Length: 218
Image (cartoon, rainbow, N blue to C red):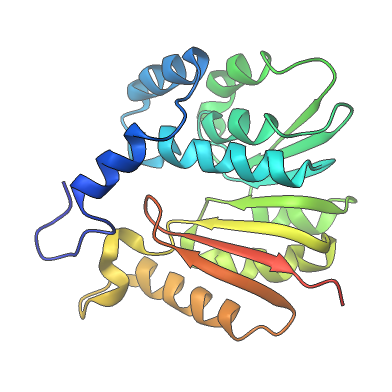
């Protein structure tokens, strides 16, 4: 339940109806969601509803290369990998080294025909060193760094490539007068994107808000 002074992203009834009439996550993902409880930070987990969106978009894009900024326990990684082409590469970045063994166990289950590269450290320092052209990017890390991540990776995103930025409605706080520093950072990011003529975007009220961004072909 959200704090009563903040609005619902969608009504509980609509959310429940949408989940009821959406395809469900597989048993491996359900098990991972349960195991992730030991971190005591399950609010950082993508979760089944957002996870199905990540899977759907990945399957639609059929990417050869994916960049994930913020691995946590690997739930989103598994969902994104569902659409990765055979022979494709998914690079996932995580700052918390304590999670390494946890998500290693999950990522080892991804088929041998797909390459998963884990990099530990500050994403802002790692992104410039990546010598890849990405088809799909999922951002779910330090919220006040979203614009910085976007600028760092933009030239590495192919024309027509997709960026998905999570948590951009910040529990509904972005439309309140007492939005916190993280929320203000996300508001600046959303404003930056809608005014960037190099991309098309739509901000979706799904889960905690997803900014779906497509780099224009020219």
